[in-house]
Amino acid sequence: MNFIRKKVIATLSIAIVSLISVNIFAKDNFTEHTTENKVPKVARTIPTKPNIIFIFADDFGWGDISKHGHPDIRTPNIDRLAEEGSEFYQFSVSNPVCSPSRAAAITGLYPSRSSIHRHLSGFDHHQNFSMADWLDPEEVNMAKVMKSAGYKTAHFGKWHLGNIGGAPIPTEYGYDEAKVFNGNGPQTTFARLYDDAIDFMERNKDVPFFINLWIHETHTPHDPSEESLAKYQHLNEQDRIYAAVVDGADQRIGKVLKALDNLKLTENTLVVFSSDNGPEHTGTTDEKKHGDGKLNIMQGTYPYGKYYSTGSSAGLRGGKRDTYEGGLRVPFLVRWPAAVPAGRTDTVTIVTAVDLLPTFAEAAGATLPKDYKSDGQSVLSLLTGGTIQREKPMFWEWRYGKESGQKPMLAVRDGPWKLFVHQNNNNVELYNVMQDRSETRDISELYPEKVKSMKALALAWKATLPDQPRANAISPSRAKKNKKNKESKNKA
Image 1: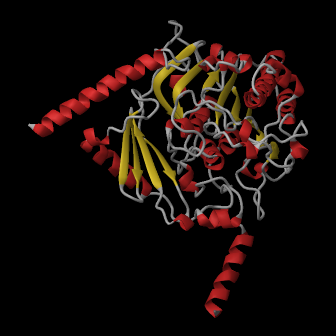
Image 2 (image 1 turned 135 degrees about the vertical axis):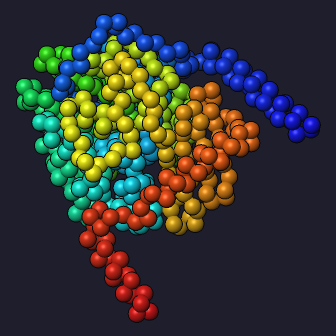
Image 3 (image 1 turned 90 degrees about the vertical axis):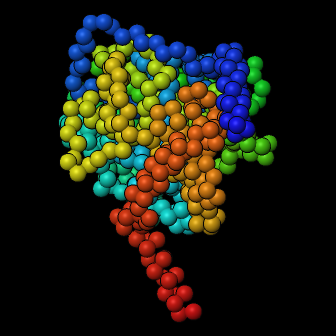
């Protein structure tokens, strides 16, 4: 009887806390509202081969746009995408750090399958995390799939999928053109990449095109223009810098949207705006300066550091490098006037980054290779006003590295439930993220059967992942260095 009484009290307590939380969020500008579906009642004919522009921001928080209620920052052009299209509140990326998040998005596979567990950097870092040195160019990816459907393909902006030891350049992945930073090949700057995209659009307006527009904002070094700084001079120093950076991105995205209008391409162009992970954690006063290493690709002359990273996760727990929702759940805005309903806000349907490749493929009429199996699914019917049935759970792996001695942490989401499996100490955390978006109430003790079944899912998924990177994704320089070190140890 005592056990039953304790269970009842615990359940009532959670219900009370949940009601209190609802009241708190009712006063919060970032409340997730009731789903709105402004879908025309007449049947929609979905056009074929839309142009596709995939705008992937960097460290851009869920709450960094004015439509999500930010008290200071105004983003009229990003808001326009939502107002003229649809947005989906339950969208998550596949890793809370740059390189693995991007690898997942363009391959439709969880990044651990490509042995990209953390940001791509140097050989020692890669070996510590049993990582590849670059994304395997033989992997199925967006550019190759879109080219197979007759698209002209381009990548402008951040790459960060490998740039050391002879890493391939983006055109080796199927892009017809590419100008990058954080990668090999022709280079561009934080501001110029938008003009690069517009130039490509103008030259290819008569054929379907696919563009990765992977922008720098809001990653460090922060690089605000004087014009944007002037708009936010009423804010304190930290918030002013960050707001000006977001403003610059919004203005330049507006230029791209205007170019589509001028070229009369807006109607049949699918524009997706999202971010690779949640906002960077705010640094200390010692981190006001980022360093001088990127001045050559900046528009300004001072590289503002993490002290000015004041991005908002809008009440979600955590940020960049966290597998809580603040690190994974990011804006997901979709505009395609010919097919996507305007003004629709879906707060309940789960969408994830590995869905993007199969979705773009279906929109383009592309046939995926027979031996390719995405970890995601096409959500085209959802984007165009319908519904989807989620076919499988979502998974994450967070590695601490060999030097730490810790086993990886796993996470799995199945419907509203999200379970963390801390393999190092065998602890678990369970949240109902539809009722507890800030992940403050661990309810694992109340649902032991749910914990058991979801933990089994996570461990079974982990067993399918490779232990080491493929030879095709390791630099010959690294392999040579490892061989030399091994021979030296054997002689000793």
